[in-house]
Length: 540
Image 1 (cartoon, rainbow, N blue to C red):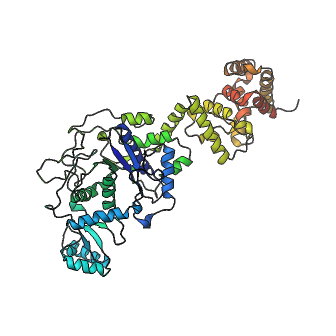
Image 2: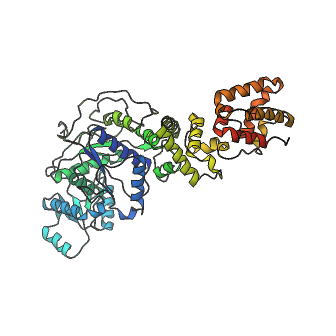
Image 3: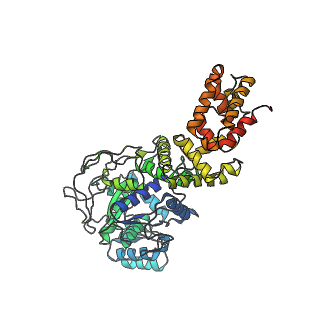
């Protein structure tokens, strides 16, 4: 049976790096196993809905090349609709089933009553958050209060172990997890007073009705797994396989948040990062860690072990393909350069780390440079880079340069010239502005370059080089010949040898650092090279 996965973000803002990583892992797992993945929008909390968020999420996924296979918003598919707000009748039908079997009940307690009950239970040292008083209402009393229009929620009757047989499946990342019922709310709410489902009910119903076989989601949902397995059991449904992915953290170890740091995918798009590098960067933290098969207890979290009864062997889902031992393999380096095909080929969810991982911006810079270098080695990749740089220059770069500096051929020659110096395509202009506009000879940096040379010495060097270059045939304008010309002119003027290259570089770039002078001359071309030198020479 082929796998079917889902990426199910909430439309509460722009897609962030953690969400993109989760979508990527769903994509990698689906492609690795010959399966598919869909996009589902979990929008049942109208108070947190952000207009435009869904379109922003779709655009970010499209930019990243993570196209959901055949179903989701904008595509339709066999499991539509893909917005939870459009599936309310479905959730009501499942709660009706739970009510009829005694696995759920109506609760009429007000917010104030529930608050008072929680405080009372806490004072007594009880581990419960609700005393389940509405569970004991008679059918006649419930019917009367419903007819009277009293507001009510529907709760899961989750604590009757004899009525809800527990089903447990090993987590694909953590292995067996301990019963976490002690840390969750008593009889959690399934359907709210407004008729909207809670996350617990909606994701179970949707995953089942959509045929989801594998659920990859953040580690923060481990504590909710007990509730979800209870709902599956109460409905008589077999749960999918779960993989809880450890979270990403900022480089300083703090929790990654939309309000803390640069975590929105759209920011990385706008700032010119390569999508292949960004995916490479977020994929590798925590990937391929070496660890032994997970024991029955997890040392760092008391809520993690098997969900079976004490002393009983774990009950495995019939879907479960995992051996009981993990094959240890070498972990990829955290800066290993990998394209999408390599990520798919090497992805192994069973050896993900069990700890949160941080993102190091320095590693993104390294990976981005390497992906740029890869792209520039092929005609197609080079043309694509040049086209994107041109679009950015037209939209954002305040260059004011002439059209001759922005042709595709010229931009490609600039990319080849700057080569490994470029970390981000936005660096093109800041690294070498003189390749797009005339040099600023008045800057302090430019003046410092030539302060050791007198005006007469500068004129002597530039006049000599200008004259010999002017006589160089166009078809001889290449690096070897220009290198020989400059060397010959330099050798003929021993007193000026220490000043020679700084003066020539100043005339072409007005910047101290940069690629070799002769390579700059080739990219600028004969006419521009001579024009810049001539602009600094006094009239004859």
